[in-house]
Image 1 (cartoon, rainbow, N blue to C red):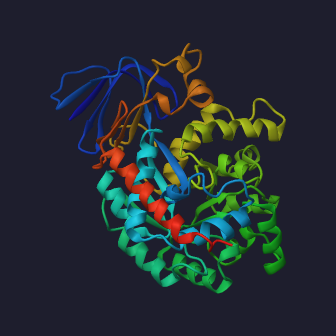
Image 2: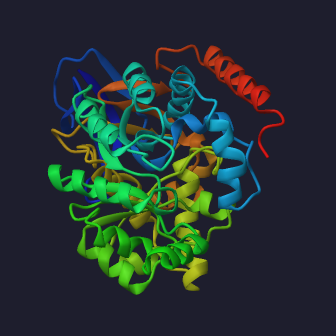
Image 3: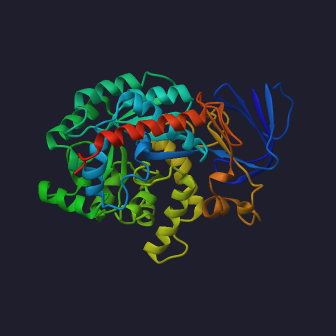
Length: 425
């Protein structure tokens, strides 16, 4: 058993419990409270630092680390078709395995303990998650060019029985890359399993306009009419929504996952988070992939989520930090279907320790506001997933020498770039 003591704990009510301790037994939180006697394998003096549930990255594309700072400064359609898709065509399963491990290393030093990942190689991603000890919910990525409804159903069965750190949800890439007949087949699978479905949705104004031209309705309306979201799910981005779209999201219990850094960088727009929140739509936060962000830091996403709403609403009080932390922790866990939404006895031990002994955390006028408005990766002292410490004081415990992992990922990237010379346009 591991004992964290002399710590302050962010409770499930988003209050700070002073002078507390937390015990972890196997992969669960065994005890939270004041000091009492026990027998421990390790005792960690937190020196007044904050223990909080790990951040949940509710939308990402982990193996795209190889495209970091490669496909930049283009709008979404050109970014995808001219730069991303041609490079991805040269990826192998082995590549995706190591590139996912690189993403995991970045997640855990940002205090992220689980991610909702959509990508092309579910087996490679699942293996990387199992081998590093991270937690991930895989999301289907079916489109006209990759995978199929049949493979999606097979993955749903396989990866929900793979290992305790991996789960799988039905999903497809987006309306604009997926024919209606495929969407109908996915809707039938969702009905068969009474399962949620997730996808990119309403990311750009052009996407919505072209969907209306094709189908006479918005992406949200289309997904609703096809039965794709009858059992809930998550829609990623949700930047350009009508009032009717918002009504559907609320009615179908959909989580709207915002990706503010990616949406800014691709000039896609600012999602109406305050409006969604006021109308009862659940909100979560994701980084999107490292090709469009380009970082995988929830601190940056949390700051942008609130700051951009203040601009959009012309209201400095819009989307307060306490709400943003709930989006980044509790609501992301709901989207992924994981039992790690808060620090509570019996919950999974997915924990991050915020180092308050850094200049950007002082003085402590308001700890939650400090975390959102001034926090950064330098404030992550420790990250624990499923009861195991994966990151502590700059050291990674993911079964890989971190420098060798960097070199492996560099070699993968260089190979693909050389193979792609003269073929991208």
